[in-house]
Length: 255
Image (cartoon, rainbow, N blue to C red; front, top):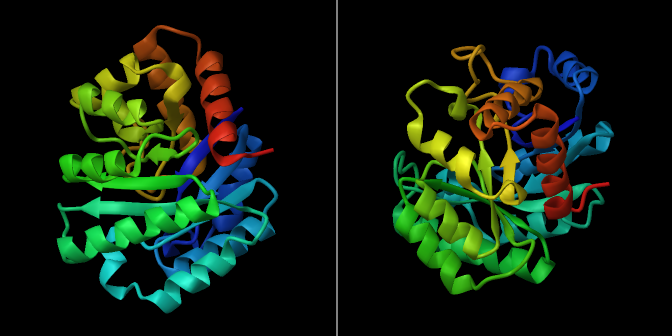
């Protein structure tokens, strides 16, 4: 039994076979999937999917790529969506200084605004951090430490950075990249952070793990990530599955 803590089920990559993808996940022991909003339309679709499928839950937010398209009216509509029973988080939000699809100053402004909104709503946050480690850490440090505050999704930093985020109360989510032969840094993180602060995810349709690398990712494949985490830590797969599922249930208040 596993939880995929981060997927993008609304994306067009799944339009032809979404039903089959979810059936494979359910039959394969995936008990919960969090499908992630990245703008107003995506968030609305995520909520719709959560309402349609018992084991799917949703988050709502503006991704840093979409910061320039974010306005107060859109944010107010997202706040309205959080009244839906199956909305369990605000995200993904954060900074992306690799693609820079939005101006960095706009990204920072929208990131801060959404952090404050999530705090007011008492929702955990899902953080996107790509080549903006110092800036994200600085902003989250200013927000202060708090239990159940959120998760650093698709973690790409080193062990010291992971420890700093954990010290602030955040979970660290390990994606399929941990299965890649040359991904020494994320392997080090997955092997050494406290198991009680670790989540696993697919980020599907992106970042398919070995042996599916190069293909479309899907929630069922989170099992390959769990297997690699178990190997790196020299523990049983069942222990990784149990603890990471418990962690996700605590963070997102899942049944």
